[in-house]
Length: 291
Image (cartoon, rainbow, N blue to C red):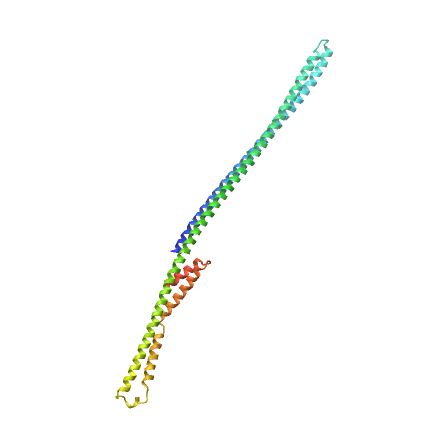
């Protein structure tokens, strides 16, 4: 009964351990999926960065082309102004030319400011995305470690409680068996004492019977001549010794019982010690089965 209980408890512990391994594998798969999701987002971010960089480069190129075009136009305008100024006595006043030039310069500065603002916004957006990705990864890792630690503590406490209960049941069974073995040994000692008393009583009766026969031998006169010099006491003592030696010989069953109860006594003494193990109970049960 005890080995089956321990086996059942061990099987339950193994099943729970397998379930924990499955849960850990599931959590690992989720972590792997999150990492893949983060990698995909990083790839998308890099693609967006490349796209924005390409767009910025295109706008920069457009601004440079526009600036060159404005410079070319300015040069043409200056040439035209000079030509008109030379050809015509009346031309465009200097204030109007300066205002147009200022407008063109303001447009160029506005384009440069817009390009710089786009670059700054892209840099801030990239920094925010990297920070959010790192925070998300740290939170996922922290949650995963907390779940693993909580599950490990729960599994450890469950296993300890089950093993402690199994050990308590085993100790109680050992004490009960030790008590039963002690009672059985006391009963065997009583049987042995009773047997010794019976052997002594039998020896005494045989001795009285021998003395009675010797007395009857001296009384009777019908003895044969060849027994004239034989002492009937010696004849009867030889028979008594043979009978007593035959009675003192132990049968194989008696030897088996003594060996069995010696083993039982050893098992009882070991079970009373603090370092008794479950192997002693198995050996005692095996000896009981052989008997």
